[in-house]
Length: 136
Image (cartoon, rainbow, N blue to C red; front, side, top):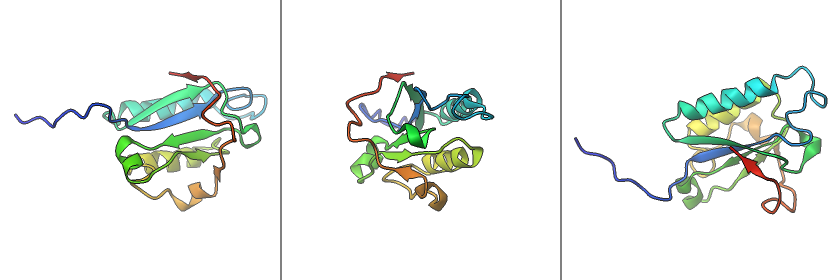
């Protein structure tokens, strides 16, 4: 049996799901199963055979566009020019469908996002990368 070589340092496409002061908050966005949506993303990652990972962050910053998800490229996607895509207003299942379809196709740098998802892309806050605490 031939095994594929292990590529150390290779990262999968990853989702950073905001669960801070506004995102995932039933008071700000009532009627949404926030826990169920996060569970759906985690199940998709578990079923991806290592091609997708999901983690949460205390606060990503752009609270006016809650709920926010950042789609980070895989190592290969970054090599091909992919950059993190910040997506706002991710509170409905159609948006999650689009995010999961895009990541299954490879994500940033490897596949174009669905047209509907591009309408929800937002600029990261200026302090992005310097704040927010990631959790698994």
